[in-house]
Length: 361
Image (cartoon, rainbow, N blue to C red; front, side, top):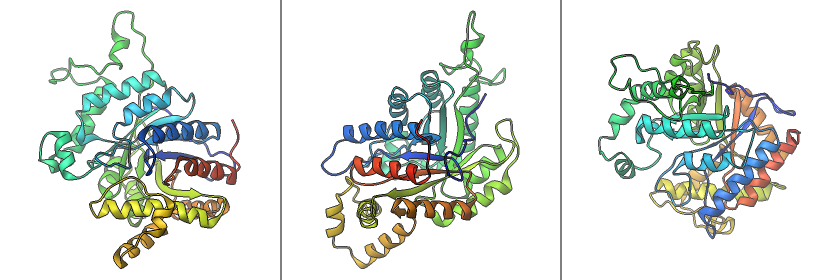
């Protein structure tokens, strides 16, 4: 049985608030620093009533240490006890469905009843790296086969391949097969499947299958409303959901004053400039981002990028998030705070929690 999709708003938040962590690595810091910060944020989020904490799969990016979501989630499971943990997401075409079912079945055993399996169809990297991951250069094949891969993964999680299917005698362990073994006892929970997207394909598929949907507003803001409309129009009730449920990922950073917030988010903007121009690296310091000599084209990109980052004082961020929620009708807001240092990211979530008067649990 799938549980935990719907969250409950806390404090004065209009919808549940959650966290998306990219495990960003700043200049002068290590991946160890980034992952320790992630655990700090997860504990903070749990103590302040955030509903879930997701990590995203990326590859071959020096400034992002989240290449192995399942490993990070196992670490976070040991540092938390209530908050939902999940992937935002695992890129399904990069992996055999059985492997994902085994990894997330293991996570479900480690953190019963609080695991989300968010799935994407993009590679989470460039084409050459995707080819190395998949050991094939036929990359479009993986994306085109996404519905079939999803169906296969779901059957492994539910252990319900029909008799005569080539995989009928193959079982993802930990998983439901353990309950049918002599003396077996197995949790009735299984990871909740979400579809992720930045365009219309996964929105439509999630709606047709009656699954919850997560949209990447933080890097595809122009497509947010059309994709959510498509999801809602396509939705068919299922055993999982009787009505649509959509969250959006939002880049949001609060600081004690507006200037500091601007300094911090500029580091993420410069990181994106370098990524988009084939120069991925560590997240620069605020000083480096301020001193950087932006070309006119780069300046135009940065200005456009920052328009979709909700940043400023805590009250300004609250107002921006409230406005975004009203405009999109999102059922949940998943906040990602991209900045150079861990302290700024932790502080941002503290300030946002205070702005919404979230409880201290």
